[in-house]
Image (tube, rainbow, N blue to C red; front, side, top):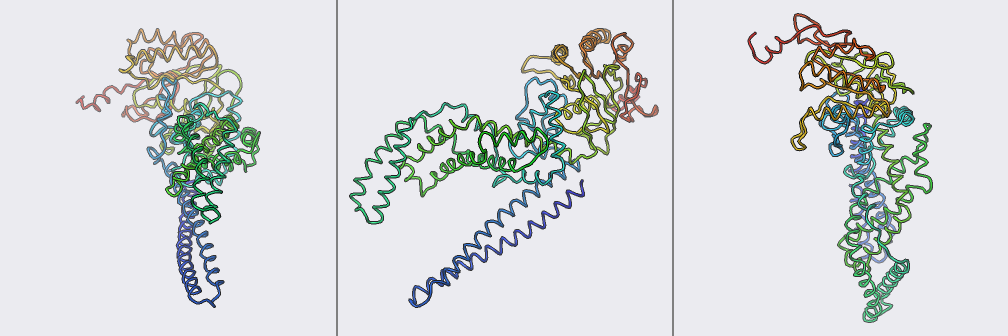
Length: 593
């Protein structure tokens, strides 16, 4: 895959050079032909007998060259943007991507049951690894995929869609170069403000009167400039129309001015949205979910055509701001009329527009997962199971770790074994194992492949207690946060299947109290049908495996060598940890022992 991306990047660099060369040639030819045309026109004007055909031909040639120059310049921009797309891909493939993409911090949710524990958002997060979305709505939907547990049918539909999109590199390239410029975006912030604002109420007769008045004013002004009417008559006839425009503008100013501020910056967003919808509409998919997206933008109306209507209206806001048109637009009440037209469009199509935005956002999220699947061909699509909680994977690894330095472990939790009790010292890999399992479930239910050689996973809610901390602002201790998280896991397990991941349960209590409390919590979870992993340094916790009905098994992670207690192999082994590394830890702290 690395070589494939490098070859594609080299090909794009060659295309960029050729396009820039053609662009320079077209520009030079345009200038030369324009100068030649001007010279020939001057010569023809000074000599009456000379034909005007040569200068016209030169002018037409200059126009054609200018058109080709614009095409080549747009092509150069697209080649450069595609090069950036593959450069970011190479960073991901070479494990140099952390901090180079979108971290998604703005989408962080308060008190989410696994967001922080699994490092789903933030710099170097799972979201940053996966996110290749072109728009903000696509990024927001990807976050929803990662943080919201779907139904089993939805997870299967996503997986089918990702499988189909996985080999379609050309489609991902087309998505990457949507929009005229890379900084153009489709964000729901401005659109939501517009959607939530009260509609501007105006009677149809007022809109028609303004339209007729504007047409009449323009006709009168043209007649005056062409000499059909004298200047005095032109002023006398057009003044009542201008007074009517001024009265309408004043009457609706309180409603129109805030809307002008809202709509002024949305033109580029709708241009990008329309191009994305056009791209989606052209596709012919086989998976039910993707076919449904295409149907959503074609029924009840043709989405790109309808959005194009709005885009043209919004372009009018851009034009009225131009210096050469600002005064006429004020006299003709153009801003007010555009607001009325946009409000009319919104009354007809807002519900459809929200559907189209949703379809494009989901399409982008699925393409992010498909890009990840394509770049990680060794990862497997898990079998998604019906029935009670089940998680089985061979050689499961964490996708955020470099693969050549990552150790895989076999895990199997279900009816026979509900709980893994994992003992071992610090740095042995226990927390990473918990995160690998949790991240595997998140990816599986997103529809993405899992970093493993095989996996069979059921639909479950996920509750993790791994990275909890004190909160001074909220006046909440780590212990209280852990208690609340465990209560959430128990309550959730009463309603549906749960996978729980608990690192160092009740670490702030003494060993005896911890063991008693841990038994009560794990017993409640298991009795409700939950499965999960509990890691600990406290060997008293490992006694839970011997309790009847607990369905727990002991595993451990420790050094592979008794001579070097800090030389870890990160492998999960049956039984309880037996080696001590206390003296090695003291030496790390600088104690001479």
